[in-house]
Amino acid sequence: MEKEIHKVRSIKGILRVPSDKSISHRSIILTSMANGISTVRNFLKAGDTLTTVNVYRKLGIKIEEDKGVIKVHGKGLKGFKEPEDVLDMGNSGTTTRLSLGVLAGQKIFAVLTGDESLRKRPMKRVAEPLRQMNALIDGRKGGELLPLSVRGSDLKGIKFFNEKASAQVKSALLIAGLNAEGNTTVEESYKSRDHTEKMLKAMGADIQIKEGNIYSVSVNRTEKLFPVDIEVPADPSSAAFFAAAAAIVPDSEIVLKDVLVNPTRDGFFRKLKEMGADIEYTNVREKTGEPVADIIVRYSPYLKSVKVSKKEIPSMVDEIPVLAIVATQAEGETVITGASELRVKESDRIKAVVENLKKIGIEAVELDDGMIIKGKQKIKGGYVDSFKDHRIAMAFSILGLIAEEGIKIKDADCAYISYPEFFEHLQNVVQK
Ligand SMILES: O=C(O)C1=C[C@@H](OP(=O)(O)O)[C@@H](O)[C@H](O)C1
Ligand SMILES: C=C(OP(=O)(O)O)C(=O)O
Image 1 (cartoon, rainbow, N blue to C red):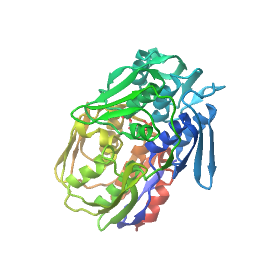
Image 2: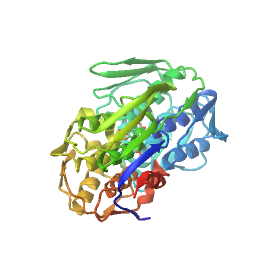
Image 3: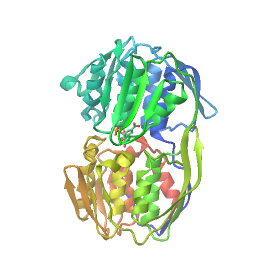
Image 4: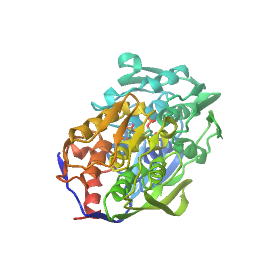
């Protein structure tokens, strides 16, 4: 489906964007390993997280909904049923990689596949360290690409340095570590999102965390996990699109309610502030162990360019496309480096952003590990491709709001992967 977004007068309103995707995935995957029933309030119902629900049902976990509350009937650390068919991971890297960690220590056999995009994404980053733990994983290109098979085995703990600062790799190893002999430790120079370790700790897992120059998280073999009650806050990665819109569309003001502001996730908002945006956290509070805030963003006529470097990427990894959109309106050149991970997301996001910008006449340069965006550009508009990547579709929709002739986006319906109500919400806050 194509979508055309036109120039608007302003953005105004109060919005609660959908719930956090990362926490929603974990609220099914981790609780399915508990002994007993966990509850999840405000679970994200979107393409990727519904994939997780389907997969865990096929693994024998009862997941039901009662008056808007999800109940997950956990069957213990090794309680999964052998699936009768291939497990379809759809478009979701998180479901795939975390599940490899789950399946490696079970007594069952499973085959995992996914859609055209997911079948191109690298899996050895998880398969390789899991093999060091004695996991039996095989697949295309020696275990790099889906379809992958996993035959559960007796695991042993390892120490692993998480070079790519990937939360999916860290999470897979910690989950496998629950069922592994001895200790499993993951270290990282740049701390990636920490929802897995936080949630596992709340469930009674034997987790130790050391903050410092090197962040380190360890888990010992765990006998059992307790069920938990989780309330999922709004997703900062989804809120980022509306924050960006309010910052670049004249005369705008938006209140984004209930947003997760965990420091491993809110790098985009900090960057926006550094660019000179009028942005404020109010009503900061805690919700099931995670910090949340209402974020107010107002139009900012004097945005300036910024540098984004490798150490800053993990806390804003999914927000780089929309940051590039904001950068087109800032004074000077924004330089983003250390972001080569963007090349292996749902699309090659470096290429997708730069190609689309150039296509509509905006100056941008593709770097091996990032991009340079020239600021203060007049946006005429035109036709761009989402490359069937939800973040690209939504980022270019935001640019459409200031485009003289509007922006038409190919395959924009992929927004449903993380934000099914995106275009409806956009409609509700624009002033024409
Ligand atoms: O753990 C998670 O929930 C995620 C981790 C990140 O991926 P990497 O682990 O590949 O950096 C992120 O891009 C993805 O959207 C969700
Ligand atoms: C990269 C993303 O997700 P995943 O890796 O789970 O497909 C994303 O949502 O931007």
